[in-house]
Amino acid sequence: MEIVVEETVMKKTIVKRSVETQQTSAPVITCFEAVPGVKVCCMTITSFLEVCLAGKDFTNFHTQRNLSFKPDWFSRDFLSMGEIDTINRFKSLKKQIEWMAGRFLVKIMVEQTFDTPVALTEITIDHQDQGAPFLRGYPDLRISISHSGDYAGVALTIQTDMDMGVDIEQIGKAPDPGFMRLAFTQREIQAMETTPRKIFTHWTVKEAFLKLIKKGFNQSLHQVEIIGNTILFKGEKTPVTVVSRPLGTNYAISVVIGGSGPQPIPAP
Image 1 (cartoon, rainbow, N blue to C red):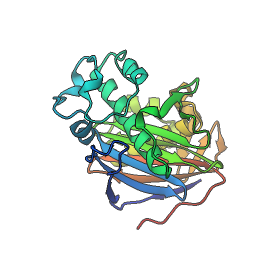
Image 2: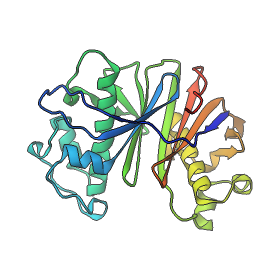
Image 3: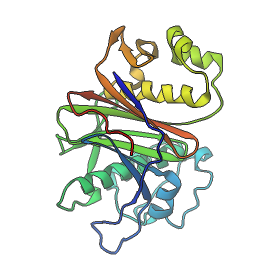
């Protein structure tokens, strides 16, 4: 496994193009290339709400019950009626908004991948049996979605010889011993630096790897070990590339790439 930890600030880009010509505003989206052919983009959920649900107050969305969203609430059309029905079945507003933000970011990235404009409402994200997302109608595109706190992130590749998982985590206080024993093996704990940033970054690598193998939390966390520069899965070394970066002031993002694709790009 090759691990690249990049301490540089990611370059900010603003998405301006839209199928609907009257819509010119868009959230600020921050992107980087993990390896050639794997693009990773992030945006704040606050920015997403200000642009796509302008005029609505979601100040305390993390703690509120679900709402019944209506098509005319949206300042930008990006959800199909079927997707609006889906979000209205979620039980919490936090889940609804995170789900929408992730899909908006996927759709913007797909739109920018191709020269031919496509209506965002026509881009459909579906799920495999164990929850991994995929793009219906785009068999050569692979995606991974994550969100934490005020950030949503997406990794996307059109390289058929690669796949990836992405994870974002907000850096909090150092986890208690009970969480550490649940999330990590004793070997990992002994080998790990114990600062909050190192612990949470370690966690993002583990979760991104589980997304890469399409298991998520259906797989025991102790089946995946990160020891130094090696990821072990069920005791076997895995041929993957890991890119971890700070995101904002108190978040970490990691991408785990598998396959025979290119090696990481040096940080600018």
